[in-house]
Amino acid sequence: MDYNCSYILLSPAKINVFLKVVSKRSDGFHNIESLVQKISLFDTVSIMIKNDGRAETTVDFSNSPNIDKKSNTVTKSINLFRELTGNRDSYLIKIDKLIPVEAGLGGGSSNAGVILRFINLFYREPLNFDELIEKSALIGSDVPLFISKQNTLIIKNKGEALESAQNPFQNHSILLIKPDFSISTKWAYKNLNFELTKPKKNISNFHLFNDLEDVVIREYPIIQHIKTLMLASGADLSLMSGSGSSLFGYFPERERIFSCIESINRTIKVDCNFIYFICKNII
Image 1 (spheres, rainbow, N blue to C red):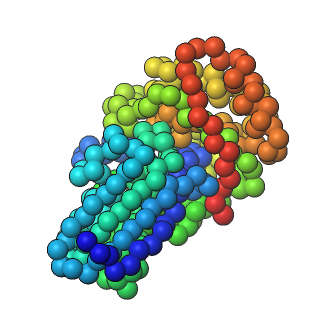
Image 2 (tube, rainbow, N blue to C red; image 1 turned 180 degrees about the horizontal axis):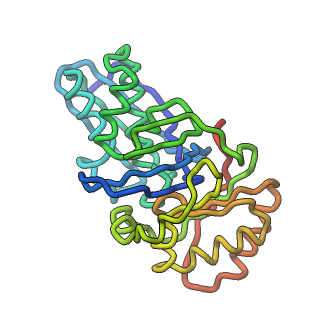
């Protein structure tokens, strides 16, 4: 099939600088409050569009063969757009994955949000911003934040309530670490003990924490070990992102990151490998 036009998009990862789980919803999801920052770690999305009326969608995760090619956030975003607008064009989408999956970095949600926002612009905005935000939450709780052009956001409720925000670590460098195990978001929320989360402060106090950390650390104590080493190496903040398993550290000086990596490689002797990314906030 010949396609009429093609485009390249960058799809960023996110980290949760703060994450409070407020309550469980009647629909099975959770109300949250989180300070979210988009960072300079990207998947690359190639999207080709053909005006043929056949409504075919092909999604190729060439370097991530374990992702279901038929049931994924990208396919869901195209199907949602068709349902809402009656669009019948065909799409060939290739995604070069750099953002680790099941890592708390929002890679799949980013892919869906970036594509949905792009095709809505491509067709001259048949859906307004509020509609995109509301409907994109049907794909996943993190998708609305990637619809937004804002790079630092407070998200509330299921994830569809967005507010612009300031990051107190805006000019810091980021060390992002992905251990060689993954965490299921569903598992993390299922094992959350709300009695342990209630006493903590809210986001306005900048008492920064992640309510899901305790759940994950009980099962994977190496998470706490890495956090401790980051802080000892000069990080001003170290937290798990989302439901994990990725962790990040905000360092005021980039040089300290390399010392931290050396310390982790030297100190941690368990049978676990790590992927390191050095990133910055997208401002």
